[in-house]
Image (tube, rainbow, N blue to C red):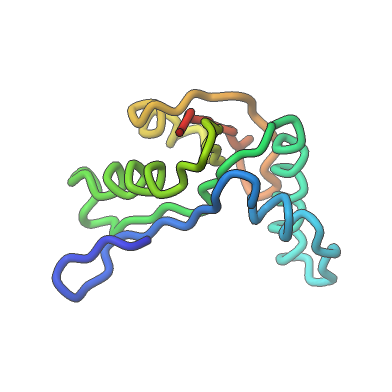
Length: 134
């Protein structure tokens, strides 16, 4: 899903419906790459999968991004809310995402709650957040 200002893409979000978590079904099952830089992402996906394993069927937001010069204009908020509406399914479910610790306040403002932290091999521990949808 994307946000546009005229013909210019200024924000985007990627997610999957409950029961179809792309991380659990695809990314976590990929073999460890030989390239050391790619292995960092692979390890991060393995770490996410470990925390996802304790969840029931869940929707997942993989990426959220907005044009940095437009931060504070509500684009990210509208994208996350639109994705939460679009990812609703037949029964209530958790919508989950992972973020850096400095982003938790933003997501708490969008009705997410922190669940746990886990290791991010590229930086500080990441935070698993969830919001009930449906």
